[in-house]
Each structure stands twice: as structure tokens, then as C-alpha cells.
Image (cartoon, rainbow, N blue to C red; front, side, top):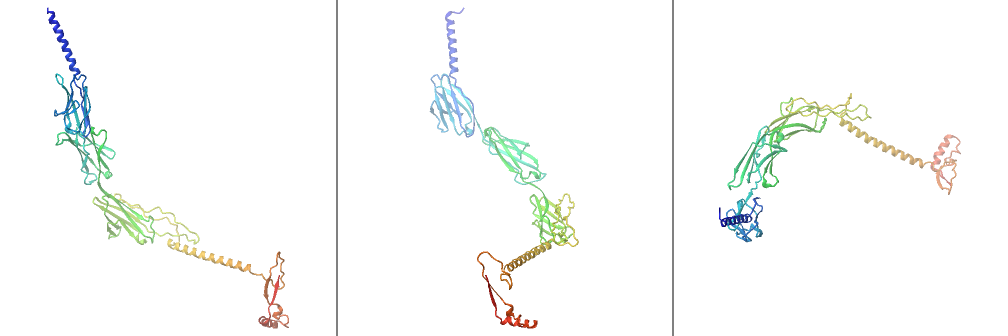
Length: 456
């Protein structure tokens, strides 16, 4: 049986030990790990329930004291005091760099000294990706091999591809540590076969990283694809006629665009034209120009042939001169033929109104113009004759003849003075026979006195 004094001593020792453990728990500082993007600001907070009349202290990974209570220990203007109380010490570090990463220590100088660790992780922001392999044009049906590269990420970033609106699966990714030993360079490769539809299509490489905070950083490049040319012939005007000017345009498309055009006429040994000009000109079209014309467009990717059938015809009129007839609209010129089909195009033959003696449309136009001018002149002459006749009628018969009765008028009577020769003046009354009367009348008319009568 143990002595009573020994039991009391053991009880006191256990109580003291329990009180000591409770004191250590309340005096233990607490912190939390932090993650910050390079260039940002990180806040470090240290708290304790029972400071036991001691001050809190922050130290960097190199064990340099930053703050002891509210007193600055390290001269670094990026480090600022945010809050200092007996139970809390909070500081901030701005413009964080990769070298700031590590374990920061919060200490309280009790007996014994108690500490807490806070791990600061600094994220390296990846640089804008770069695309390589698009510098030179790619021939159609060849395989395009592109490389996308981005440096400075921590941890290593992820790269993804897109062509137009379609995602591309990469053929491999490589991660290499940068010389600073902290960041990484990521390289991604992609391969795909191109067609002429891929010309000018945008290929995009995008980098994904947690430091970008849901923003996107990408680079876009346009593909340049070389493909074989195509060609078609367009006439200007669309419906050529005899006597007019005609231009045949050889419209060549491709990448690169055709730079050489060879014009030939089927059945002719010598070429018509070989130059960089794509237009064949007929200054004055005639029926001898009818035939099939061939345009060969050439680029560095090859040659292509287009054909056009030309049928020169005049446009006749109806035989009736007073009826103006309009020819029915033609079905259209021949369509150009690609080198692939090599089929004969339908000839250009307008639908015409048949006539035994056709007249060219240009002559009919001139005749119509001349007839219009003549009709205007005749109309003006008739109008002048009508006006002149109306004028003469209005001024005839104002003076009544001998024996005429003047009709009564209302109002003041007009005074008319008329002059004429009377029978007496002519000498016809005194002549014994007709011959003498005629002789006397002729002599009397010259020397006889004129008689004047006034009518009121």
C-alpha cells in the first residue's frame, strides 16, 4: 500500500502535466498555405489563441525575419504589415516572383518556442504560344506539319489545336524544364493532309493554364495552300453579233493565280496569242471568226484548258417595212468547258425570225432613223400650210363686191374703204361689140379713174 503522501504527489504531477498540455495547445500558432500568380500579391496570416505575453514573428524561406510584431526587420518595400495584435500577425507580399516561392515560418517565443509553416506556391504564367511550319505554302494533298510552343509556365501548361471550327488531335507533346529550374517549355505537334479548301483557313494553338484564370491565350495563323488552276471563258458582250467588238475573258483561278495564257483556234496551226493578258479581243466581229477557241491557263501548279464555241450570225427583220419586229432572246452563249470533261460546248445560235431577204439590224436601225426625220419634216410642212390657209380665209371678203348686200350689225357701224373699177370705167357699156368692149376695157383700166365707195 502506497503512503498517502506519495499519492498526493502523483495527483499533483498529473494535474500539472494536463495543465501544461492545455497551455501548449492554446499557444500553438496557425497558418495556411497560399497560391499566387507571378506578379500578384499574397497575404500571410498567423493567429494564436494564447500568446502567453509573447510576440509573433514571420520569417521567409531563407529564415530571414520579415516582421517581429509590428516592427519591420527586412528592408523590402514589397512586404507590408497588414495587422498586428497579440493574437494575430498578418503581412502581404506584392509583385511576387518565382523566387518568393517556399515555406514561410510563423513563430511565437514561448517556452518552448512554437512555430507554424505556410507553403507559398507561385504560378508561372505561360507565354503566348508560337506556331512554326506555316512559313512556306503547302501543296494540296500534301501533309502539313505544324509545331506550337509556349514557355514560362509553372506547372507545365496544356496546348490544344483547332482548324477553323474543328478540333485537331495533336501527334505528340514534349515538356522541357527551363534554365531557371522553375518553369517549363511545352511543345505540341500536329499533322494533317491539306486540300485546296484549306487555303486561307485559320489554324489556332491555345494554351490552357490555371494562372490564366479562365482567360484564353492563343495564336492564329492562316494556311497557304497551292493548288491547280481552273479556268472558264466569259464573252463580253454576252451575246456577240456581227460588226460589234467582242472580248473573250479567260478567267483563271488558283493559288498561285495563272500568269500565262495561250489562245488558240481549233483548226488553226498558229497560236493566236501567248502572253500574261487573259483577254482575246475581236475589234470587228465577222462570220469568218466563227469557231472553237481554246484558252490554256498555266501556273506553277500546272495548266488547265477552257473552250468556247463562237457562232457569229446577223439578226434579220420581218419583210413588212411598217412592222418593227424584235428577235426572240437567244438561248445564251456556249459555256466554257473544263479540261477534265473536254466535251464540245453548244454553239451560240440565236433564235431568229426567218426572212427571204434578211436585212442586217444595223441597216434597219438607220432606215428607221431616216424615216422618223422625214415624218417630222412632213408634219411641220402640213402644219404650216394649215396655218397659212386659215390666215388667208380670215382676211378674204372684207370688202363687198358691187351689188352685194351688207348684213346689219349691232353697235357702231364699222367704216370700210374699198377700191375697185366700175363697169363705166372699163368702157364696156359704150362699146358697140365685144371686141371693142375688150379693147376699151384694157385701155380704160390703165387710164380710167378709180371710183371709191364708202360703206357704213
